[in-house]
Length: 432
Image (cartoon, rainbow, N blue to C red; front, side, top):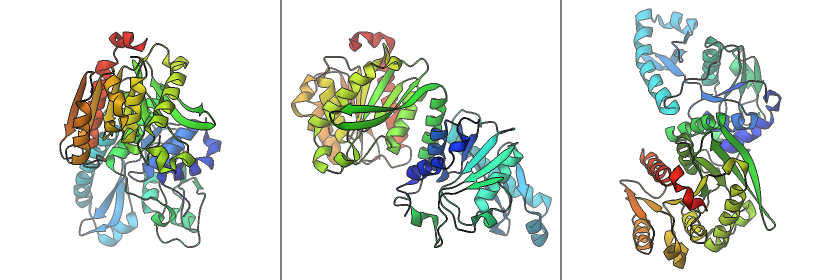
């Protein structure tokens, strides 16, 4: 095993690509699994991130056999050897292409929302995936990027077989791979977590990258006693407020779900600060994870640091808490003397805030999945103890982690609407 997960693989791969920093490259991730890897590469190189959408063209009567591939902008590449061997005609190719192009366009809308593809003409393009097995997908992606006008193509993956250069042929101008083990059976064997990447995570990666292109976006270190806490501050141009994230048990600033929510807030013109309330060593002790007093103190410390930053000058501040992080957010809000504009809890444990609930003055939204029955009951009881403006939003069909299709998007939309309505310029009086 070489990597904890795809994000870790991306950070390691970025270390081998430092020569491209500041050279105007474009990073293309192959959906789905290659995009989280590419997102970390793009972040480290401060480069634009996009997806390389490729759809295989299968022989009509033998669809697993690729006769070519299509990409955006009407690009099509074909394998003349396969066409000759199978006697596939132009009409057959056109019919298969029509069906695949519908799916390609659907994915483009789903991933980029209303954004245009990043232009590749005359650029150096890094084609990134989570690994190479046969090389067929990566080769097709390189050909598509070439057809879209890329001047130089670098295929970059975290892990590949020793003979991957032969498998890639001459479709890339350069190859970068930090690990080429002798014993290679499958890409997933080199990851501790090789969970399938879903469409929501792909879209969130692209949203984050788009937000960074027009925002203050930087890594931040906070000191809390002897502990050094790390986070990422993103503030879009013209932001009306900043939301600090208090992550739950077993989570961190790299949580895909919280990053998905944060990207939605960035698109709505709100800044975000995702940071770790605990160091890695501290998080290994489950007692710390449920020490809401400690977590609340850390959140209050981070709030003071953010208030002092130039990027946050005059902006309203809010809290987003998940799981035990919600209790920390409410405790910190209760002690903030009305200087927190709004609080949102997702799948939270507000009950763990105890007596502090009655002292919260910030408008508070509790979001719970309809099928997360035990936590829903705890949230109903906690809401009854709140004396501030509050609401309980139940997302039908959602369980605790909001893994069901579309449920996390609903939660993100609810959070966005709550924050934007309570962190508008008129909320300046709440900032103190």
